[in-house]
Amino acid sequence: MMKRVALAMAGMMVLSLAGCGSSNSNPAAAAGADKTAADTSAAAASSDETYEFSLSMTYDVKSPMAVAAQKFSDDVKEASDGRLVINLFTNSALGSETDSYIAVAGDELEMTCAGVQGLDAYAPRYSFLSAPFLFKDTDHIKAVVDSEIGDGMKEDFIEDNLRMLGIGYRTPRVMSSNKPVRTPDDLNGLKMRVSEMSSWVSIWGPDTLGATAITMPLGELYGALQNGTAEASEGPYEQLATNKFYEVQDYVINTNHVYEWVAVFISEKTYQKLPEDLQDILSEYAVSSFGDYCTELNQETADSYLQELVDNGMEVIEPDREAFQEKALSSYDKWFADEWTVTDYDEVMSYAK
Image 1 (tube, rainbow, N blue to C red):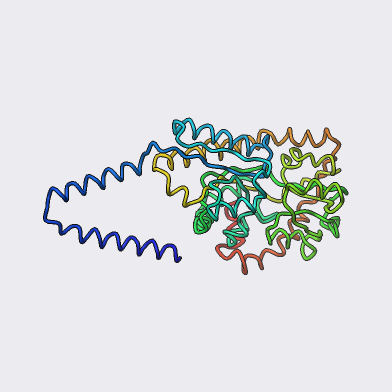
Image 2 (image 1 turned 180 degrees about the vertical axis):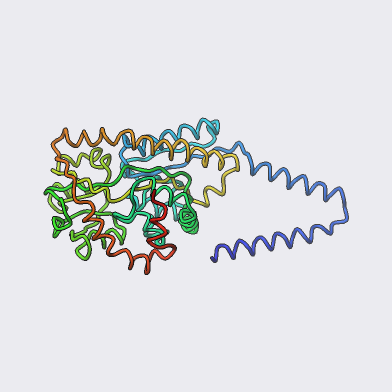
């Protein structure tokens, strides 16, 4: 709010100064001033200045997210005739997903490719968009994100200097474990690594689904599963395969508990400093080269990632998903009333086909 007030005051000062200038009785001087303003505007719209950005992600270099992000980078460079170069840093090279969100929001990093973890810190009213067992399928979550609800989420992110440029969709998140899990009762006391999001810790935890929910960066998870600090985890097939969790986990449990978006974010301050044509290029290719392509790749590779897990010794379990869903939903009235106040359960479900 203060930022908007400051901008409004600055705009009023500019208008005031412009009003004083309009009393100039010299037509030639006025014409010259108009030409200068026009030239400045044109320079802002298109410039030969070059830009080089860093884009961080926790995803493996071979993952659909990284492959799509590389295509996005290549296409932006080509479309801009080399004026805008985006360098990718995969595999948590620049830190965790939380680290990247903080860095972009603080204008210390230009871009990141990240998932739903940022909701808790920057758009907490919308963190139901990652709630376990709430959404029916990818079409359901996409319909909500594409609605006015999703527009509100994007506005909340921008308030914290995070502009969403393009959104893709991963395959559903499943569980991995060192013991078979078929019902919520099998979770009791199981040390399960989950996202740092408060709703996930609560819903997976003892008060709802029954696990002992623990949090840690993805880059530390393999070691934790190996030494027993964690006994279970969750994520898409791709995450389990590219991180080789099949070496330290025995079971894949098809809970399909979260249908997840992943987005390219840019610092809003950085975005606003770009010429208009480069803004347009970024926005266009973030949708087509990253968002659409990322979704396509995730769908195309899901079966092969699952097969990789099976080929490396993991057993696939089809759990009683309705039992999990029923226990999770029992907590949602309170979450919608206290935290997710921009909508309610019935409205969210109205988008399901």
